[in-house]
Length: 215
Length: 99
Image 1 (cartoon, rainbow over the protein chains, first blue to last red):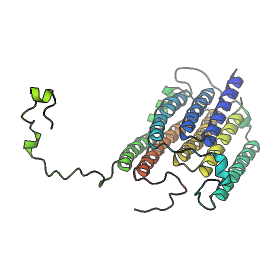
Image 2 (cartoon, chains in turn yellow, green):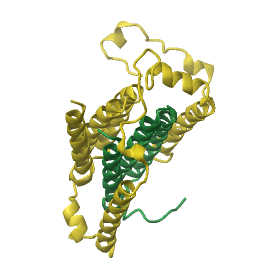
Image 3 (tube, each protein chain N blue to C red):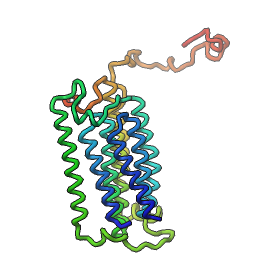
Image 4 (cartoon, one colour):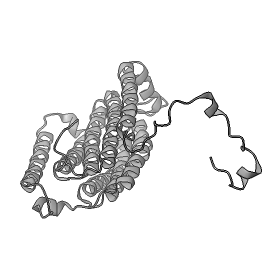
């Protein structure tokens, strides 16, 4: 049963990854990545990492991917296929780009071969095993209680640093994506006096209700 | 399944991500492929954590997810800023760094 589930999830993960790399439209790439992440969460469950699987689905496939979908919808990148990339058929493509990209593909193939050789040639017998013994229970390996205890005792410093990192990233994103000055003059109204804060005399009158008066 | 199978899947996913980072030109897709590489590494981390039966690898995977979320936030902010300035959204065209 677990073998069947493994092969289904692994096929889903690899198909999703191929889809991310190959698909022409960035929007479909994002959708393929969502499928990939959910398949990966199943693999995490098979490895008894229940909490990490839940975080993967909720945070990654949920929140982060929504961010991606918004930006793709905002920017709307045009499609480009990987085949014409490798052939360099694009008009106005950078010179030498096709050769570089072909080199990248060759490099990736070499990387895969090297990783698989490292995997097959490893002398670790544990790689061919089913992992450490596991006993189910309320505080067993991989449950939220177990992870929380580790995060708040042994890995407290890493936990706090991660929270600071998130804060810095949030501030940085706001600074990066804010509207730059010079496009819309906003500050040429002079200083605000207390009189500006008073509501105009016609506030709440019938003239305002029928739209006769505008601010 | 034995741990080795999971490691093989993680190697394949990592390589596909590296292929995408090196060949695609749209920075959005490059970011997506970076996510693929991080996820391949995460799968290997969790497989090794299962192999040894302690939770350190899972904690490290969670931290990697945090770092990935930060990277996505800043990267997408940069893409939005590039788009606002009407620059081409293409990593081959964006070659100059200028203040």
